[in-house]
Length: 470
Image 1 (cartoon, rainbow, N blue to C red):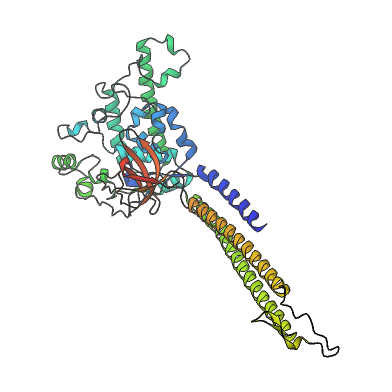
Image 2: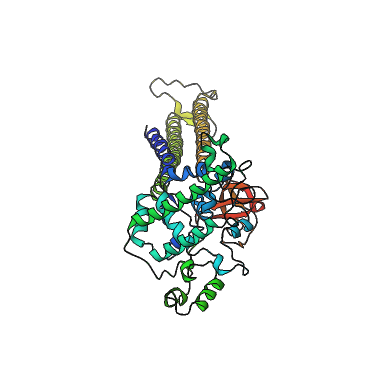
């Protein structure tokens, strides 16, 4: 009855864990790195319902390709190519998946790109804007308390306007082969080419005004103007130190010179590689509780089996003791009646002193032997039955141990058969003997795995995976 109760509790908790997966997502900040704390850990929460809508409103990738991106990385990928994601600019086949397309968006890191072609504070403003838009109320409150300097915003908006007005940088789509926001218009098929161009331009203007109005309505008074963890700020709003150096040398009296020009980026000392997915605290607590309950259930069952074995052994010892006592008593009575144990015959003491007659002096036909032998046979039969019960109990314990072993690991768990040293911040270093969970498998021989011990996650070669444990 108790075991049935524990099993019901386990089922309820498992259901609870499955359903809390809708809790806020901890962003990985792969792009918006300045949102991490001083130890390099991500802490801002994203609304899972809003994140799930991104795949249907983005113009970066086909939906099935966008779905392959981990949930906590989707928004950063969306922000990285914000105007392409919004369907306002297009390159080649319409997908921002190459360095060339990135460079066309003004985020170039090559030395041959002039400083005038750069968009300043793009990451700082867009990360704030989109995280405020897709974050939980707690995230919005944190961002509001941090503040966004208006000078960052004005620099970015000026660069964005020039970018929209330059048809060589922000290209119009090929309406015959590319997916665009105006495809959803009911009269799209009858709109001529120039009107389609005008519609895209109007979308750009609307986006620009919405962004400006959103930031303006925040009316933030606080402003962090010396954020040395924000590498874009320490580079004076540019992507590289070379562009910062050029900017500061050409503007020796600029008001930024004593701020960003004199500042050095403070790279955080990370405690561990960031995870591609972190569950909320409540999910972790619930999971730990489930594991504890399941472990307690099987531990109780295993202990119960051990108690049963001990009781069986005690019963066998008691039966043997009772048999030995019974046998000694029988032999003692036979001896008193004149039975010679060694010769197995009655001696002269068997004479009946009252009548003078003798008892049967023929050798005993085995009545005593038969009685004793019957008792021995019965005891042996009991021992055999007890041993059979012990064997069955051991089999039950073995099955319980096997169940406990299976419960130790989540699905798709593998041991690591070969070492791998990470060469990129997105990779994870592996050592032979580690136990990891396979999160995603990609073409080209790469996989995404999670270290069950440290909860780290990253990419690694598929050949490192060894035996499947669960």
